[in-house]
Image (cartoon, rainbow, N blue to C red; front, side, top):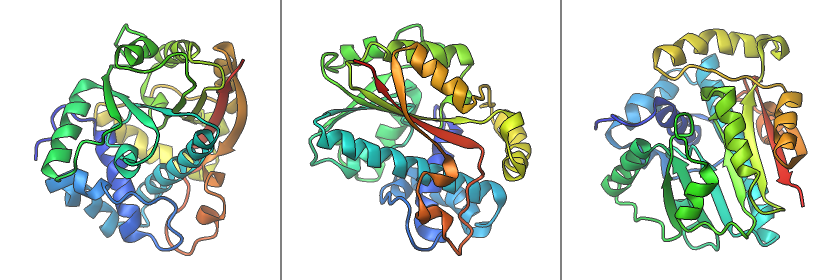
Length: 286
């Protein structure tokens, strides 16, 4: 299976979700039954790394980051849906499977990502025999180089600007320039009052503990060699300032290791946070 046009980050993220159900014990933090199938013929190339080295600092940390931020985000999304929100925007969706897992639900899902990634995902879904979710809309956009505002692209694909939305932006900001992060938030500032966003961001070096430093020292050259270097690091205060500058008020900021509560902290297996990221939940001001 060719992976041309697909971000390596998207593949490793899907593999982490799949591997969590294979190599980690109970309690399961986040259950994605479709991730392995989406990876198709290359599944074992990626998941196999976790089978062989489940306790490796980077692999265990990657699994923890992916499943905890997903658990945290979808729990907050569920709360927003109970309050009447019916639009879910996934920025940098990669191989996300929420639309597959909630096909019978009331939420319209808008996946925003590079057109090459979206094309690969749709082909992978077809190969895996997964039907196109009825409430999923693909919105092609390169957030780094694309000059068009994400909200304009969303509106052009059926998104209702007058209604509130829930936005997730996970595993993306580190790979964008700070200017691109600010530009995206400026666009999201046009969302209806009451809209919410959950985003994660890597901590600057000065705020990292020993485990986060070791994780970064190992992974930084690897992601750079793979053509997707880390570019932006935000302290909790910097993330809050950016959000507030563009019309959002922070609801909560949670270290990655605390985002899933005791499901991550009280474990006897290898799953453990790298402690390098923070999750910020914010709401669009009225």
